[in-house]
Length: 233
Image: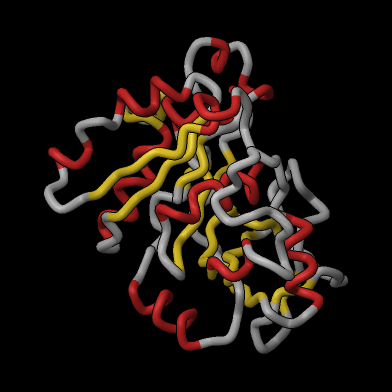
């Protein structure tokens, strides 16, 4: 699942007329870098959630299955259904009927061109008893305090002396979005907006979230300045 429902306020005025995932980065829409990386890993069943100017995203990638035979691309149009974005956990819950028991989640505004979406990672996760596996990155200047820690044996920590930044890339089990971790009815028919971090922190405290550090190229393309820097990098 690729998250693409945000308003992109920090990207204004660029996002006043274009959703952030469609902003051009080195000749292609920002989100297309993630779509192509998933395709290289053999993951061709894709779900994209939308809200702000979401019809543009649906139109831009409507022919993705034709361009990539075997691909199955579906949309969860939160803006059309409710008139607003459901935040990360709320959006994932809304899309659960389109997702399997285990699925990737990543943000459509993150640039990580060398990240390897591998079947081996999925198999290891499925064989574990974890509810989520997160890829963390060294803290960028805009998030110096980080988000989560990692133990020596690969457990994610809610509280830690050394914290890293959540890359937005993770593997998830649908059980994290059901009781007792999430109070929203799967499918989120009421359109409840729910953030992801509280669910993750609750599961971390129960020892049910693992993590690893990713040190390859990675940028949260959250401002016009970061986008401009990547264009000439």
